[in-house]
Image (tube, rainbow, N blue to C red; front, side, top):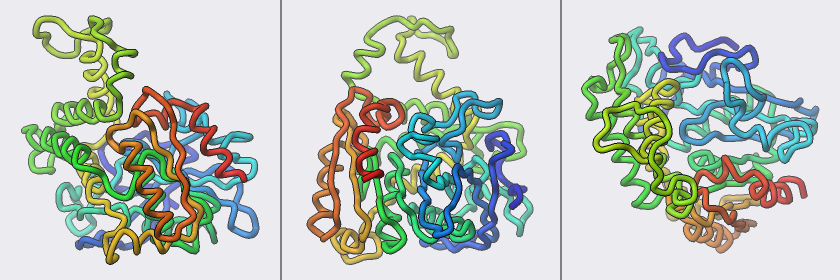
Length: 377
C-alpha cells in the first residue's frame, strides 16, 4: 500500500501510520471514469479472526482519516474524535478494529480533483467526475474487503459522514449490524442546499480558481474558499449559541482583513476559520464534497425513500441535535420514523445543546450518553 502520487497540493502532511490502498479503476454512478483510485486510511485495534469486529468511522465535510491518535506534528489538534475512539472509550479499540478513511473526492491522501489523471499526467481539476455519497460508500467497501472485514459491527458518522453511514445500511444491508447517522437524514433540505451553493459560488467567483485548473500556478482560490468556509461555519452554529459565545463583543484578535468601522468577535472568528481552512483543504474538493452532500437522496435509484429504507437490516440510531438548523432535529426524527414505517429497526435520540450542528464534535458527554448504549448493548 503506497502513497497516491497525485494526491493534491493541499493534502495533509503524511504520517507514519497513515496507509494507502489502491482500489483500482472506478465508475462513479453519475458517469465518468477514474482510472486509479487510492484511499488514505488509518486503523486502530486488531481485526479478530471472524473479521466481524470492525467499526467504520466516517468523517465530516472537511475532516480526514485521523479520527483518533492524539496530537502530533501533522495533527496539532489531535484526532477529531479522540474523545470517542480509543482504549476503553465509546468506540473501544481494545475490542473493535476501527477504520477511518479519507473519502473519495477528498484531499487528505485519497484520490480527488487534485490527483493526477494518468492519461494527461496533470491534475484532474474540474475534469474529475461528480462523485456521490453512494460512490464514497462503494469505494470504502472495496477497502474494507481488502482489509479482510467480513461484517461491520457498526458504522457511525456525523453530517456528510452520517449520510454515508445511512447509505451503508441501505447499500450493503447484510454487511452492517449497527448504523448511527448523527446530525443527518436521507436528504438535505433547501436551506442547506442554498448555503452550500453560496459557498461554491464564492470559490468559483475567485479569479484564482481558473475554472478549477489552478494547480501548478502558484496560486489558489483562497479568498473564495475562506468566504465559503465562513458561510459554512454559520450553518454549524445556532443563534442562542452565538449569543452565548460571541454576543456583540468587539474583536479581541488581530485583524486579518481591512476593517470597516471596527470588528465584532464573531467576524474575527469567521475570518480565522476561513484562513485556517485554506491552509489545509483543496478548494475543488470543497466543491465536490458539498455537491455530494447536496445530491444525496437515500431513495435515489429506488421507487421511493420507503423502498430504500425497507432494505435496511441493521439496527439504526438517528441522532438529532436540538439547535441544528442544517439538519434540523425534526427532520432527523422524521427520517427515523420513515425508516421505522418501512420496516427498519430504527430509533431516534436527541442531543440538547446550543452548539448547533457542530455538537457532535463538541458535546462529548451528551454524545456518549446516546451512542454508547446503542453500540455496546
